[in-house]
Length: 435
Ligand SMILES: [Zn+2]
Ligand SMILES: [Zn+2]
Image (cartoon, rainbow, N blue to C red; front, top):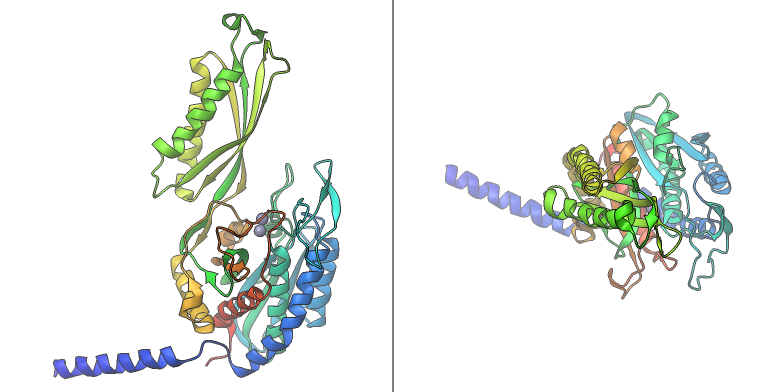
């Protein structure tokens, strides 16, 4: 009896598996119709944003375009959230949960290269310098994708079971000195109002095969902190180092000693860490040993649990390396972003939804990366999933593709349809009509 039951079970499993394999990935016919009709506009929005990029907290025109679109869909729209952020609320025709979908809005002080017909020629001021401005991180595409998702979902409003908050976030690319980045500031300004989302989703353009998305469970993008070190010695003649304390030699020792923290002190698998010194400055003349040296760097880490331990090791290494020579060193660590961590259960549900919409072969697993994303702060407030969509032009490998923030960063526009489908899949998984 048991034997036959298990055969029957195996047979029915096989049948179900082959039926699922034959099922075409995609959406219901009405949603498909909406997707097809919005695609040309999505590309047009993207090109408009690309040609008119704005730096962090200066996304004034961008916000106007976004808000006008959301209003045209009859969403409840709030502007000026975190200065230039825009929030749109779509209330479905049926009861259900609240979810939030996020796109970031800012461009970078990068002068675009290449010959796109809609290339950016924008210029502005950054850190007191005249700079070119470019959507070199693909945020133009994130906004266009989310606007398109809003169009599709608003058109099917009556069958939406729940509420969708569309969050257009300014200033993802880093906080201004002494201030908050866009995600933290939106949270501080009560971005969700009296709604409490049960899940939040965001995506990012990233070098990878177009037509695919990458979803990584657990730590996905690094925490990022700024490191400032001032080493103080004692100024003396270059020919009489014994009469002073040389902060340049001490700084060299500190730079090297810091590299032993990732390589000798942290668990290389559980707690990958990067310490990079990107700026070192000291001295005015070849034969004077100066009084001080300034250094700036960045700390990257994936495991939130090891952050305090890492800080302690950095402070100890700097202080005691300096002390060995009789110098002193002051260390300041400023939080830039915490790690983006995808809760495994939430991710696997989102992944299943993406597989149903895109097909198994289009949803990749991938590995964590060490750049940072301030979506991580939303994840502190709301369980959230962040994922990449591949943007390589056909025939270009990920190794050949220009990285984000490069003047030749390039998004293969057809990949945006995959991003749109993925966003709709994870949203409709929560608030869609029952199949
Ligand atoms: Zn970026
Ligand atoms: Zn970005």
